[in-house]
Length: 114
Length: 112
Image 1 (tube, rainbow over the protein chains, first blue to last red):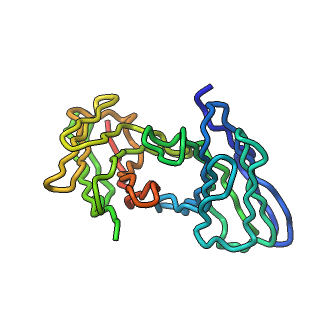
Image 2: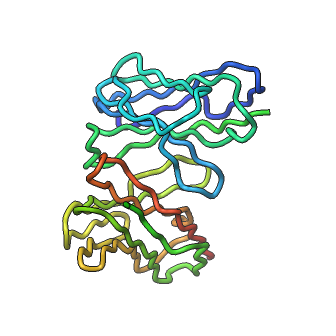
Image 3: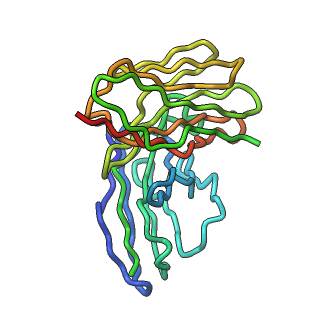
């Protein structure tokens, strides 16, 4: 298995909703990442997990809450989002935090906040 | 600080034309260099990489050479196809913090 799987592919949520994005990989990678990508922009790093511990939080608002239950799973819990949070959310993984062999990205969850 | 600059798009070419997408970076030390491609409606895929000076990364007919003296990693392809239409991101892996830094992306449109 050489993929990063993200679910759901599309999500529409209201500003008072609570939802979660899920990411899974079975490549034995020990670093996992959440990126946010707005239309026609490059991905922006949100969080980095290394060996299931949060190692980088790029000053992301607390309405985004990451969780890494085990080495294969990464979740992003969403609560009280704003319309400007609408974007493509990408999960990625790498063998270790060095990432020298490159990152493997999932296809993303397209989130719309209404 | 660390940064990466890509040529702005869109780049519009006819099928079988030659492609160059420029990428330059500033960094302390010598980063590993990557090109990622994003097809419409999809996530990013690693296209090629180079980890040290003068290395040439290649994949699917695309090539890029790590030029330390000019801090560049330009992407080239000799004959593009319609299926190459996508957004291409240059991404140095900076030594400090070991995080990918994405360029702004260059949209390529190939017409039949």
